[in-house]
Figure 1 (cartoon, one colour):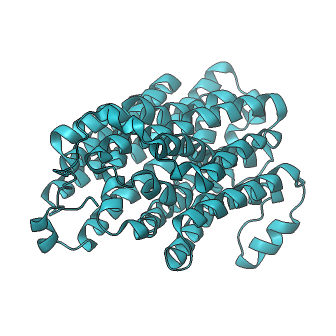
Figure 2: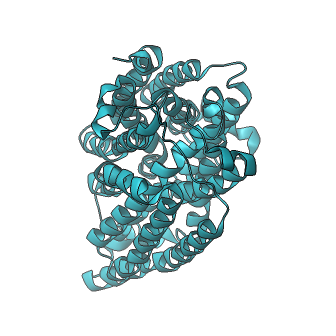
Length: 436
């Protein structure tokens, strides 16, 4: 089993690394799930169709695929702690790129800024996920990742509400019918003014990220020591001999795709159904994910193994997807019975089922990582980079959804989720056991 070196073990418990990494996971969630509110905003500000709007998720998540192996080389060269600092610096640069993008209302600049943000997050994710797996017993790794998931999705719950309150006020003036009454010059001026609303939030984000760089630099976060002197694997290509890693990457590809669809398209879906609070709908998905993580902390490993949690996640994902596809967009029966007594704004039943996918998705990521990284020793960093490449599913699968939504309508396009949950079910039952 990989571990910290003996000196670090005597000086540090796993509590301090958990707290420090937890702060970084909050940053992951804040930056990542801001996209759910950003997509319908840019759809209006840059006058995009459904497919074009989902290019936001494409460029953000494709960075994980393009930059994953280069970032593993950075970690090998500079170590995990320095890698986190470099990742935060890249993210700060991406946040600052939003300033010229917002002032010019240029969609291509927004996409470049999102790609740079995604690159920084790739480095952070590649560094921090092995930390959580390796700082304690492998059988409880899913529980520790679930704790991080609560922090991550807690940020995802908060950020759409903040974005809606700060940025999405007075959006009625920017509806298609309102804009149609303006001259082209007036319309351009109004949309430029709307786009410029993003400047202050992203300046603040850049300042926070720079502050976190200093925080990590001066923190007593121990370095991971993953080298095993008895391990004969010296070539990174040796990781390709481990089917549980390759299949794990494909499973994460499918998982991140369905997670992003559940979190980032729910706003577009609600907007299409005429819901006034469409900008905050991502919070519904994130709230159910937090509930799922809480269940994971309670149940894993004492009552539920990581494999069993993955099976349950896949089956419930299929069930809720069926609910999205088959329920009436004008019906509020299930939503009212589940959410009404909480005083939460009503949503149609298919929107509720889409949000419930957050509950189904919560334990997939925590369960896959320890299953995929089992017994890899010094290949852990390379395997982690391959798994991170699976996050490209968040780029391609939502884009495929956007194409289908243009052709078949938003609700009907969600059938795309079913084969993805089928892959997760296969990995849970058999894929992670394949060693040759």
